[in-house]
Amino acid sequence: MGIIRTFLDILFPPKCVFCGRVLGKNDDGWCDKCTEELPFADNFGHQNGENFDFCVSPLYYIGVVRRSILRYKFRGASFYAEAYGKLMAECIRENPELNYDIISWVPLSSKRERTRGYDQAMLLALATALELDDVAVETLKKHRDVRAQSELGDRAERSENIEGAYIASDPEIIAGKRVLLIDDIVTTCSTLEECAGVLIRAGASDVVCASLARGG
Image (cartoon, rainbow, N blue to C red; front, side, top):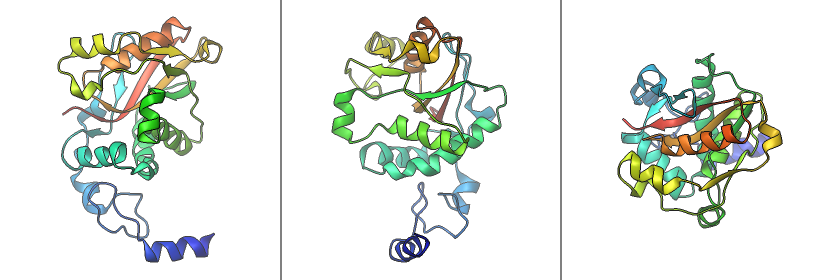
């Protein structure tokens, strides 16, 4: 496998998930230039919620980060999840109060997943958990397809749009557990509030959250 991987790297050299530059041998998925210039979030993008204790994010959803995530979500760049997972895991390690019993994610509806071909938040959660020597498990299902939150305006409109869209997949898994809920982008926190509320009502003791990026 090592020889095959080396051969493939020569033919198709790995590139930075943010700017597209060819990576050096020891790069983690993004280049040195981006390491210096990425819009890292102040105070880890810390946000508080009503149904979740807090949410952290390593990056702001602007510039090269926004363009990278759009490729990840809509242009088939699902392999970006590996690099993103490293950033997420480091952010989680840097916030020791973000202790958890279970790692999970904000799911897509089955209709949206079929159209896209994958659930980007699930891949992100799996990659993050792998970096943390853990596993991610399904705790929620999106049983009703709704308009994309990005198409809507303020928090009230987004909250109304997402209300009742999620259900707990297996309450026994989360009973009495502190759930770390992962998503790709957080803007108004409406989706996290809805999902965290479902988990709490299904028996979770607490919910904490992490996203790759937050609104600037």
